[in-house]
Length: 354
Image (cartoon, rainbow, N blue to C red):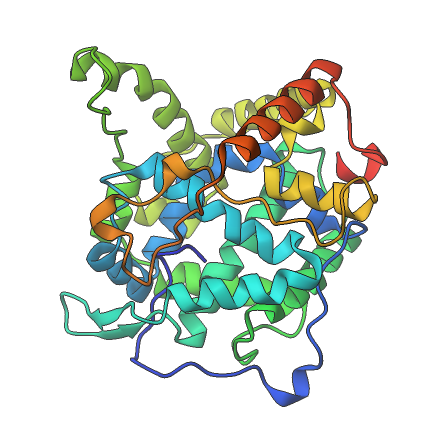
Protein backbone atom coordinates (compact mmCIF):
# COMPACT_ATOMS: atom_id res chain seq x y z
CA UNK A 1 0.00 0.00 0.00
CA UNK A 2 1.47 3.28 -0.95
CA UNK A 3 0.09 6.66 -0.14
CA UNK A 4 -1.11 7.07 -3.71
CA UNK A 5 -1.33 3.53 -4.90
CA UNK A 6 -4.36 1.44 -4.08
CA UNK A 7 -7.47 1.72 -6.20
CA UNK A 8 -10.39 -0.48 -7.16
CA UNK A 9 -12.81 -1.68 -9.79
CA UNK A 10 -15.88 -0.19 -8.10
CA UNK A 11 -16.38 2.93 -5.99
CA UNK A 12 -17.30 0.80 -2.98
CA UNK A 13 -17.28 2.14 0.58
CA UNK A 14 -14.78 1.06 3.18
CA UNK A 15 -15.49 -2.47 4.36
CA UNK A 16 -14.69 -3.19 8.01
CA UNK A 17 -12.80 -6.26 9.10
CA UNK A 18 -14.96 -9.39 9.17
CA UNK A 19 -16.26 -10.10 12.70
CA UNK A 20 -15.07 -13.68 12.43
CA UNK A 21 -11.49 -12.67 11.67
CA UNK A 22 -10.49 -12.29 15.32
CA UNK A 23 -8.52 -9.64 17.17
CA UNK A 24 -5.72 -8.01 15.21
CA UNK A 25 -2.38 -8.83 16.89
CA UNK A 26 0.73 -7.00 15.68
CA UNK A 27 3.80 -8.86 14.49
CA UNK A 28 6.82 -8.96 16.77
CA UNK A 29 10.62 -9.39 16.67
CA UNK A 30 10.41 -13.18 16.49
CA UNK A 31 8.54 -13.05 13.17
CA UNK A 32 10.22 -13.70 9.84
CA UNK A 33 8.51 -10.63 8.43
CA UNK A 34 10.42 -8.45 10.91
CA UNK A 35 13.61 -10.16 9.81
CA UNK A 36 13.23 -9.37 6.11
CA UNK A 37 10.81 -6.51 5.44
CA UNK A 38 12.90 -3.72 6.94
CA UNK A 39 16.10 -4.84 5.22
CA UNK A 40 17.80 -2.36 2.88
CA UNK A 41 18.02 -5.05 0.20
CA UNK A 42 14.32 -4.61 -0.57
CA UNK A 43 15.34 -1.29 -2.14
CA UNK A 44 16.78 -3.17 -5.11
CA UNK A 45 13.24 -4.28 -5.99
CA UNK A 46 11.61 -0.85 -6.32
CA UNK A 47 10.89 -1.16 -10.04
CA UNK A 48 9.60 -4.71 -9.55
CA UNK A 49 7.02 -3.83 -6.90
CA UNK A 50 6.10 -0.47 -8.44
CA UNK A 51 5.37 -2.04 -11.82
CA UNK A 52 3.43 -4.96 -10.31
CA UNK A 53 1.23 -2.66 -8.27
CA UNK A 54 0.55 -0.32 -11.17
CA UNK A 55 -0.24 -3.16 -13.56
CA UNK A 56 -3.38 -3.85 -11.55
CA UNK A 57 -5.80 -1.79 -13.68
CA UNK A 58 -7.72 0.07 -10.98
CA UNK A 59 -4.59 0.69 -8.93
CA UNK A 60 -2.72 1.98 -11.97
CA UNK A 61 -5.57 4.35 -12.78
CA UNK A 62 -5.44 5.80 -9.28
CA UNK A 63 -1.68 6.33 -9.51
CA UNK A 64 -1.97 7.95 -12.94
CA UNK A 65 -4.72 10.34 -11.87
CA UNK A 66 -3.74 11.16 -8.29
CA UNK A 67 -0.01 10.53 -7.81
CA UNK A 68 2.92 12.89 -8.38
CA UNK A 69 5.46 10.06 -8.48
CA UNK A 70 7.13 11.32 -11.67
CA UNK A 71 7.49 14.80 -10.21
CA UNK A 72 9.36 13.61 -7.09
CA UNK A 73 10.05 9.85 -7.27
CA UNK A 74 12.80 9.62 -4.65
CA UNK A 75 11.00 11.81 -2.12
CA UNK A 76 7.67 10.05 -2.73
CA UNK A 77 9.07 6.57 -2.17
CA UNK A 78 11.23 7.59 0.79
CA UNK A 79 8.42 9.15 2.81
CA UNK A 80 5.83 6.48 1.95
CA UNK A 81 8.04 3.68 3.23
CA UNK A 82 7.91 5.01 6.81
CA UNK A 83 4.20 4.34 7.53
CA UNK A 84 4.28 1.21 5.37
CA UNK A 85 7.08 -0.14 7.57
CA UNK A 86 5.13 0.95 10.62
CA UNK A 87 2.28 -1.50 9.99
CA UNK A 88 4.85 -4.26 10.59
CA UNK A 89 7.13 -2.65 13.17
CA UNK A 90 5.00 -0.30 15.29
CA UNK A 91 3.90 -2.95 17.79
CA UNK A 92 0.78 -1.93 19.71
CA UNK A 93 0.58 1.16 17.51
CA UNK A 94 0.62 -0.82 14.24
CA UNK A 95 -3.17 -0.81 13.85
CA UNK A 96 -3.17 2.96 14.31
CA UNK A 97 -0.55 3.24 11.55
CA UNK A 98 -2.67 0.96 9.35
CA UNK A 99 -5.65 3.25 9.89
CA UNK A 100 -3.45 6.22 8.99
CA UNK A 101 -2.51 4.60 5.68
CA UNK A 102 -6.12 3.66 4.99
CA UNK A 103 -7.17 7.28 5.51
CA UNK A 104 -4.67 8.43 2.86
CA UNK A 105 -6.65 6.40 0.32
CA UNK A 106 -10.21 7.50 1.11
CA UNK A 107 -10.35 10.26 -1.53
CA UNK A 108 -8.54 8.31 -4.28
CA UNK A 109 -11.33 7.36 -6.64
CA UNK A 110 -12.62 8.04 -10.13
CA UNK A 111 -12.83 6.39 -13.53
CA UNK A 112 -10.02 5.24 -15.81
CA UNK A 113 -9.67 5.99 -19.52
CA UNK A 114 -12.01 3.09 -20.33
CA UNK A 115 -14.69 4.34 -17.98
CA UNK A 116 -14.06 1.71 -15.31
CA UNK A 117 -14.81 3.04 -11.85
CA UNK A 118 -12.29 2.58 -9.05
CA UNK A 119 -11.87 3.41 -5.38
CA UNK A 120 -8.67 3.04 -3.41
CA UNK A 121 -10.36 1.18 -0.57
CA UNK A 122 -12.03 -1.52 -2.62
CA UNK A 123 -10.93 -4.68 -0.73
CA UNK A 124 -9.67 -6.60 -3.79
CA UNK A 125 -7.42 -3.77 -4.95
CA UNK A 126 -6.20 -2.89 -1.48
CA UNK A 127 -5.30 -6.53 -0.89
CA UNK A 128 -3.39 -6.79 -4.18
CA UNK A 129 -1.08 -4.00 -3.05
CA UNK A 130 -0.54 -5.86 0.23
CA UNK A 131 0.10 -9.11 -1.65
CA UNK A 132 2.94 -7.44 -3.56
CA UNK A 133 4.58 -6.44 -0.26
CA UNK A 134 4.25 -10.02 0.97
CA UNK A 135 5.86 -11.30 -2.21
CA UNK A 136 8.56 -8.63 -1.83
CA UNK A 137 9.50 -10.36 1.44
CA UNK A 138 9.48 -13.77 -0.25
CA UNK A 139 11.61 -12.60 -3.19
CA UNK A 140 14.19 -10.65 -1.18
CA UNK A 141 14.69 -13.64 1.12
CA UNK A 142 14.92 -16.11 -1.76
CA UNK A 143 17.27 -14.13 -3.99
CA UNK A 144 19.32 -11.90 -1.68
CA UNK A 145 19.20 -13.33 1.85
CA UNK A 146 20.03 -17.01 1.46
CA UNK A 147 16.67 -18.55 0.57
CA UNK A 148 13.61 -19.91 2.37
CA UNK A 149 12.38 -23.36 3.27
CA UNK A 150 8.83 -24.35 2.42
CA UNK A 151 7.96 -24.16 6.14
CA UNK A 152 9.28 -20.59 6.26
CA UNK A 153 7.16 -19.61 3.27
CA UNK A 154 4.09 -20.95 5.03
CA UNK A 155 5.04 -19.04 8.17
CA UNK A 156 5.46 -15.85 6.15
CA UNK A 157 2.05 -16.43 4.58
CA UNK A 158 0.44 -16.72 8.02
CA UNK A 159 2.29 -13.58 9.12
CA UNK A 160 1.14 -11.64 6.07
CA UNK A 161 -2.48 -12.39 7.08
CA UNK A 162 -1.75 -11.16 10.61
CA UNK A 163 -0.04 -8.10 9.10
CA UNK A 164 -3.03 -7.36 6.86
CA UNK A 165 -5.40 -7.33 9.83
CA UNK A 166 -3.67 -4.15 10.99
CA UNK A 167 -5.54 -2.21 8.27
CA UNK A 168 -8.98 -3.17 9.55
CA UNK A 169 -10.02 -4.04 6.00
CA UNK A 170 -12.31 -6.87 4.92
CA UNK A 171 -10.49 -10.20 4.97
CA UNK A 172 -12.67 -11.50 2.14
CA UNK A 173 -10.00 -11.32 -0.62
CA UNK A 174 -7.29 -12.97 1.49
CA UNK A 175 -6.48 -16.56 0.44
CA UNK A 176 -6.91 -19.19 3.13
CA UNK A 177 -3.56 -20.96 2.68
CA UNK A 178 -0.13 -20.63 1.07
CA UNK A 179 -1.26 -22.97 -1.73
CA UNK A 180 -4.38 -20.91 -2.33
CA UNK A 181 -2.29 -17.74 -2.37
CA UNK A 182 -0.03 -19.19 -5.08
CA UNK A 183 -3.09 -19.87 -7.23
CA UNK A 184 -4.36 -16.36 -6.52
CA UNK A 185 -1.02 -14.78 -7.47
CA UNK A 186 -0.75 -16.79 -10.68
CA UNK A 187 -4.33 -15.97 -11.68
CA UNK A 188 -3.91 -12.22 -11.14
CA UNK A 189 -0.60 -12.19 -13.01
CA UNK A 190 -2.12 -14.02 -15.97
CA UNK A 191 -5.62 -12.57 -16.11
CA UNK A 192 -5.78 -9.20 -14.36
CA UNK A 193 -2.50 -7.38 -14.85
CA UNK A 194 -2.00 -5.13 -17.84
CA UNK A 195 0.50 -2.66 -19.20
CA UNK A 196 -0.87 0.85 -18.66
CA UNK A 197 0.62 4.32 -18.55
CA UNK A 198 1.37 4.11 -14.83
CA UNK A 199 3.35 0.91 -15.43
CA UNK A 200 5.27 2.44 -18.33
CA UNK A 201 6.10 5.41 -16.13
CA UNK A 202 7.76 3.03 -13.67
CA UNK A 203 9.60 0.99 -16.29
CA UNK A 204 10.81 4.13 -18.10
CA UNK A 205 11.39 6.25 -15.02
CA UNK A 206 14.03 8.95 -14.81
CA UNK A 207 15.06 10.87 -11.71
CA UNK A 208 14.30 14.61 -12.09
CA UNK A 209 17.30 16.87 -11.47
CA UNK A 210 16.83 19.20 -8.48
CA UNK A 211 17.10 22.89 -9.30
CA UNK A 212 20.03 23.41 -6.94
CA UNK A 213 22.17 20.80 -8.77
CA UNK A 214 24.26 22.71 -11.29
CA UNK A 215 25.44 19.89 -13.53
CA UNK A 216 23.78 19.62 -16.99
CA UNK A 217 20.61 17.53 -17.12
CA UNK A 218 22.01 15.01 -19.69
CA UNK A 219 24.96 14.34 -17.37
CA UNK A 220 22.57 13.93 -14.41
CA UNK A 221 20.51 11.41 -16.38
CA UNK A 222 23.64 9.44 -17.30
CA UNK A 223 24.55 9.20 -13.62
CA UNK A 224 21.28 7.42 -12.76
CA UNK A 225 21.01 5.28 -15.90
CA UNK A 226 23.00 2.29 -14.56
CA UNK A 227 20.99 2.26 -11.32
CA UNK A 228 17.63 2.31 -13.11
CA UNK A 229 18.79 -0.22 -15.71
CA UNK A 230 19.93 -2.53 -12.93
CA UNK A 231 16.56 -2.28 -11.20
CA UNK A 232 14.77 -3.07 -14.47
CA UNK A 233 17.01 -6.10 -14.97
CA UNK A 234 16.26 -7.35 -11.46
CA UNK A 235 12.55 -6.72 -12.05
CA UNK A 236 12.66 -8.76 -15.26
CA UNK A 237 14.23 -11.66 -13.39
CA UNK A 238 11.75 -11.54 -10.50
CA UNK A 239 8.64 -11.11 -12.62
CA UNK A 240 6.55 -14.21 -13.17
CA UNK A 241 6.83 -15.31 -16.84
CA UNK A 242 3.32 -14.01 -17.78
CA UNK A 243 4.17 -10.58 -16.35
CA UNK A 244 7.54 -10.51 -18.04
CA UNK A 245 5.86 -11.37 -21.35
CA UNK A 246 3.30 -8.58 -20.94
CA UNK A 247 6.11 -6.13 -20.22
CA UNK A 248 7.99 -7.26 -23.33
CA UNK A 249 11.08 -8.17 -21.32
CA UNK A 250 13.63 -10.79 -22.32
CA UNK A 251 15.13 -13.23 -19.80
CA UNK A 252 17.57 -16.01 -20.61
CA UNK A 253 18.99 -18.93 -18.58
CA UNK A 254 22.24 -16.97 -18.52
CA UNK A 255 20.45 -14.00 -16.97
CA UNK A 256 19.01 -16.26 -14.30
CA UNK A 257 22.47 -17.60 -13.43
CA UNK A 258 23.85 -14.06 -13.22
CA UNK A 259 20.99 -12.94 -10.98
CA UNK A 260 21.52 -15.88 -8.65
CA UNK A 261 25.27 -15.17 -8.48
CA UNK A 262 24.58 -11.48 -7.87
CA UNK A 263 22.14 -12.42 -5.12
CA UNK A 264 24.74 -14.62 -3.45
CA UNK A 265 27.29 -11.78 -3.63
CA UNK A 266 24.79 -9.40 -2.03
CA UNK A 267 24.11 -11.93 0.71
CA UNK A 268 27.82 -12.25 1.50
CA UNK A 269 28.45 -8.50 1.46
CA UNK A 270 25.56 -7.82 3.83
CA UNK A 271 27.04 -10.09 6.48
CA UNK A 272 29.38 -7.18 7.26
CA UNK A 273 26.75 -4.41 7.02
CA UNK A 274 25.79 -3.03 10.46
CA UNK A 275 22.15 -2.89 11.41
CA UNK A 276 22.24 0.92 11.55
CA UNK A 277 22.69 0.83 7.76
CA UNK A 278 20.96 -2.43 6.90
CA UNK A 279 17.66 -1.77 8.63
CA UNK A 280 15.11 0.90 7.83
CA UNK A 281 15.00 3.49 10.67
CA UNK A 282 11.45 2.46 11.61
CA UNK A 283 12.56 -1.18 11.85
CA UNK A 284 15.73 -0.37 13.78
CA UNK A 285 13.74 1.63 16.33
CA UNK A 286 11.31 -1.29 16.71
CA UNK A 287 14.13 -3.70 17.59
CA UNK A 288 15.48 -1.19 20.10
CA UNK A 289 12.07 -0.86 21.73
CA UNK A 290 11.71 -4.65 21.89
CA UNK A 291 15.13 -4.93 23.55
CA UNK A 292 14.39 -2.19 26.07
CA UNK A 293 17.09 0.08 24.71
CA UNK A 294 14.54 2.85 24.18
CA UNK A 295 11.17 3.30 25.91
CA UNK A 296 8.27 1.25 24.57
CA UNK A 297 6.28 4.44 24.10
CA UNK A 298 9.10 6.38 22.39
CA UNK A 299 7.86 8.54 19.50
CA UNK A 300 7.74 6.67 16.21
CA UNK A 301 10.47 7.46 13.72
CA UNK A 302 9.07 9.69 10.97
CA UNK A 303 10.41 10.48 7.50
CA UNK A 304 12.81 13.44 7.30
CA UNK A 305 11.08 16.71 6.55
CA UNK A 306 13.00 17.32 3.32
CA UNK A 307 11.05 14.48 1.62
CA UNK A 308 7.69 16.07 2.44
CA UNK A 309 5.27 16.57 -0.49
CA UNK A 310 5.59 19.82 -2.45
CA UNK A 311 3.94 22.77 -0.63
CA UNK A 312 1.03 22.89 -3.09
CA UNK A 313 0.11 19.27 -2.20
CA UNK A 314 0.53 19.18 1.59
CA UNK A 315 -3.08 20.03 2.37
CA UNK A 316 -4.41 17.05 0.40
CA UNK A 317 -5.59 14.14 2.60
CA UNK A 318 -3.83 11.54 0.44
CA UNK A 319 -0.36 12.64 1.52
CA UNK A 320 1.72 11.69 4.52
CA UNK A 321 3.47 14.89 5.64
CA UNK A 322 6.41 14.26 8.01
CA UNK A 323 6.19 16.43 11.12
CA UNK A 324 8.73 19.15 11.77
CA UNK A 325 11.47 18.37 14.26
CA UNK A 326 13.15 20.81 16.60
CA UNK A 327 16.82 21.68 16.22
CA UNK A 328 17.62 19.70 19.39
CA UNK A 329 15.84 16.63 18.03
CA UNK A 330 17.76 16.85 14.76
CA UNK A 331 21.09 17.28 16.55
CA UNK A 332 20.39 14.40 18.91
CA UNK A 333 19.44 12.11 16.03
CA UNK A 334 22.60 13.04 14.10
CA UNK A 335 24.88 12.41 17.10
CA UNK A 336 23.20 9.09 17.92
CA UNK A 337 23.43 7.85 14.34
CA UNK A 338 27.05 8.95 13.98
CA UNK A 339 28.12 7.16 17.17
CA UNK A 340 26.17 4.04 16.22
CA UNK A 341 27.81 3.83 12.81
CA UNK A 342 31.26 4.57 14.22
CA UNK A 343 30.94 1.59 16.55
CA UNK A 344 29.39 -0.66 13.90
CA UNK A 345 27.08 -1.76 16.67
CA UNK A 346 24.76 -4.60 15.56
CA UNK A 347 21.33 -5.18 16.97
CA UNK A 348 21.37 -7.80 19.68
CA UNK A 349 20.17 -11.25 18.56
CA UNK A 350 21.65 -10.51 15.14
CA UNK A 351 20.74 -14.01 14.03
CA UNK A 352 17.09 -13.00 14.13
CA UNK A 353 17.45 -9.59 12.61
CA UNK A 354 20.04 -10.42 9.95
